[in-house]
Amino acid sequence: MESYLPIVYISFLLALLAIASVAVFRQVLKTRRIENALSRLQSKLSKEKGTALEYYELGSILLDKRLYVQAIAQFQKAIKLETLEGTELGAVYNALGFTYFAQEQYDLAIRNYKEALKSSPEYVTALNNLGHAYERKQLATQALEMYEQALSYDANNSTAKRRAESLKKRMVTSA
Image (cartoon, rainbow, N blue to C red; front, side):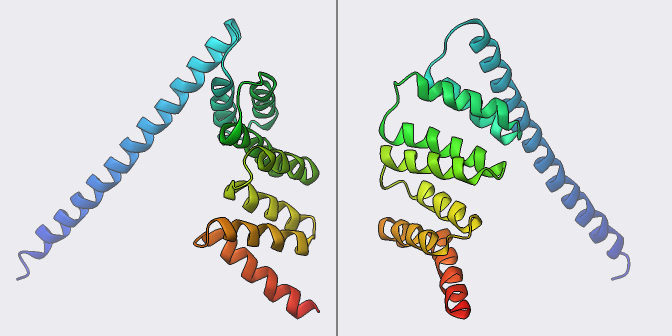
């Protein structure tokens, strides 16, 4: 039995190493894909006018990289083209709001989340984000209203459920 122990141990280590290698390889591919998209979009948009979706895509990549000022500029370019409507326009305004939220500019975030909801009233993500921004501004009643509205469109929304329950508990204990 003791002679098998080193073999089992080495096999376990090799399996662990293989799993880690696959995870690292996948991350490298993902990063490379994002960097290629960033390079392609920056190159194209520096030479010619792009589509609203290209500006949105570039803005999203910059947002992921936490380059907020550059992301805001790209989202605003997408909006100014006035070619998006409905859910697509709502997504751009939501991303713009999220960018302001990340910089703790809650009033600007709220304004943009509301614009997202004008374009797409049932946009649950924007409702959740608006609720979160209201929470940060200590506006619990408005926040709860947004989470409940999100739940009216998507009863299984875990974020809205969790945040609404938390707010209700806080509101009861502070009353």
